Amino acid sequence: MDIEAYFERIGFKNSRRKLDLDTLTDILQHQIRAVPFENLNMHCGEPMELDLKAIFDLIVRKNRGGWCLQVNQLLHWALTTIGFETTLLGGYVYNTTDNKYSKTMVHLVLQVNLDGRSYIVDAGFGSSYQMWQPLELISGKDQPQVPCIFCLTEESGIWYLDQIRRDSYVPNEEFLDSDLLEKNKYRKLYSFTLEPRTMEDFESVNAYLQESPTSLLKTTSLCSLQTPEGVYFLVGLHLTSRRFSYKDNTDLVDFKTLNEEEVEEVLKNIFNISLEKKLVSIHTDRFFTI
Image (cartoon, rainbow, N blue to C red; front, side):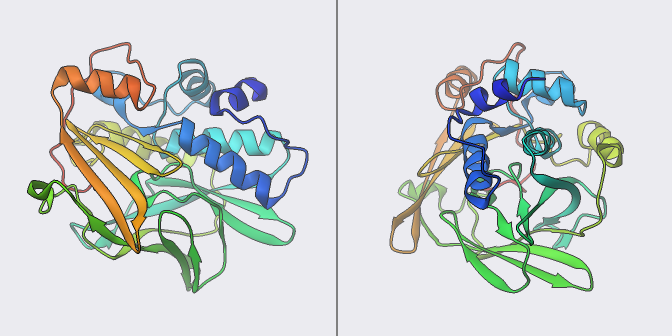
């Protein structure tokens, strides 16, 4: 695997000689704006692989994206390769339908230590929940970013990541009651501990997410990409977008329903993805929102 090919893939041309917070932030932002958070392989009849070399080939060579187990593993490899002190952590995602965190460790997140401080780095949560900057691992402190205000809270060794969101302005009034529209101003995202993990810890959940009929990712095809102004999110046949801070304390949210032919064009023109096999677009779960 070639680190220079990775940096070319994410369009990163800046200096990486200083292993500081600015460089870490710059790499994270380049990756989330170049590499989509997506699960399209499993909806094209292909596996979502956990092997790092296969992930490198998919994302770097084939210009694709992946879900958290893939994109964050690739980011971990890249950061470690250039010298950052990086640790894999496991997360439990909050399900707004059940109002509780997942029992299974389904999310991969990174911890990076810099100059005596620790940061949480995550390139694989997608939509308008995606952090744009590393979050300092400090409890109870609001950390404003372009997408929203993030806050980490620690209780008895368990860390919780939440966000405080702006209002939404939806010009297409027929979508005001859409299940795709996030309506909560305060949103719980996931919990995690600081216990170091290995990729072997995620092998069973990687299989579960692809095979179980109860897996949210099996019942929904999705593709999300951050932009300098906001985010695009394709859920099934629905293309959504959110422009952050369209006006004071308000985001602009747009919805469009596509047909199968339009999905292929949107993937190509917005997400820079060309699929090798036929995508079966599906959206039967109401968990994913913009």
